[in-house]
Image 1 (tube, rainbow, N blue to C red):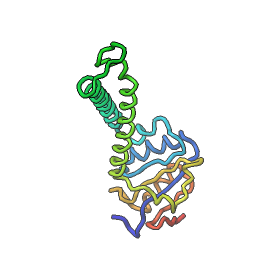
Image 2: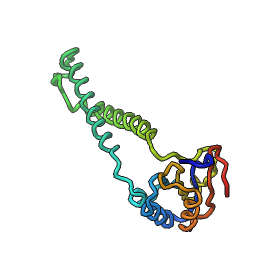
Image 3: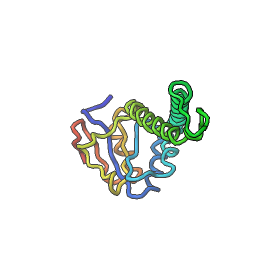
Image 4: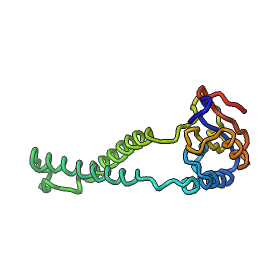
Length: 183
């Protein structure tokens, strides 16, 4: 249950090593709905948070193969069956000439398809984030911000605040629905 319209709690750290240590402690304490907002990628954060390896690279590989098959099939159909042309006596199915278009189609399908899949999958995220424009976290400049959502099964506002403070976080504050903070 989410008491008093509280969305969650924020606390920030100034060093990546402190953020990594805090993420491991949050994971080990049994919190499930938490996230770290960071100004740059932190190596090892996924492991510290207990996240599984992403399946998105597999989707990208499948989409790249689909792009290759599409480009080769289209070019072979057009150049061999639909509109064969004689270019200096070269064979109609001259696959080396098809490589540039095949590469472009592969990149296009993989990039566009992966972006769409990532957007759709990201909308299914189970961890509600802090209200984006209402809460100034500092995560885009110089802070590593811990966010624990009030949807966590273990949620108790006082216990969450005590726990985040015990990690050594600065600026610990509860965030309500409107994005207002209680410092």
